Length: 342
Image (cartoon, rainbow, N blue to C red; front, top):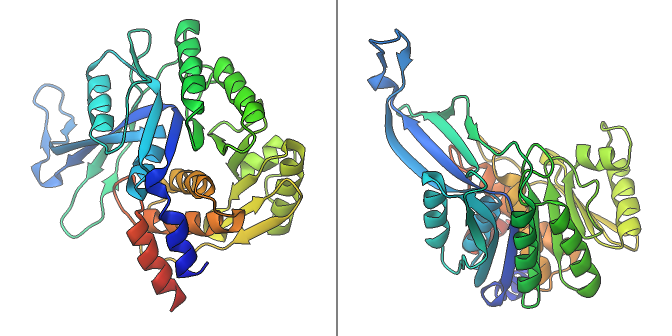
């Protein structure tokens, strides 16, 4: 991609309206100072003293964070949180982001707020070291009334959206935002708005999702097509092309250190290798940065190959951000592209 084409595509981001529907959680980081360690008088167990707490939107919120970093003009999170302290904190963190409208982000007593609590050992001169995470999730089915309201919000916003991103982050099906009514709504929108980029990603795989743009990893692709998971790049390209032809929508497959493969409905595939590592890495959030950049680039008129290039730049920046769920801005991507071209 030429620098001129980079500027042409990214220059359109400020005029875009993107809907992010899915499981928004609160990423809460507890920074622990090991020099302040003590032993509990009551239990005799070690005490980790937290000296700083920082929070940010996570899961689908990580995608939104990346869209904010890209300078997307208007962002509509669609999902829910509980009527609890964590929900208050999550809504406050979302509202603080420029361009974010919370009109369709539901606060409900029927759900608890999804939380990833991440204790970090902070030692001078050392990268943060994460301890066992403490998660808070919903383990019961999302009530029908909540699911229906979310699906209605999606349909309402779709008319003016330039792209829709759907993220299913929960471990147990039907306990989060992406329920059967929402998948049905996504399928209907895919039919009535064939030129609207609708990109879906799910940590449990995309089996049962309607034919929209699929983004997944190598293992998820193989599982969806009932193939072996240990497959090389040629087989990934072939399988991605098969799935794209079946859905009549593009398919993107992330391959970690091997880069990303994209397939078009006509069977054509493109592979963009990952950029070389530049030091220690932390892969948390890399996949979400890819998702955000693919959808935004396509909404801005990028070709499949151009979208892959931009997503690769973003993921390379994110994996080199330690102790946080990182993002990549257009200016950072521009600089990395220039450095890589030298």
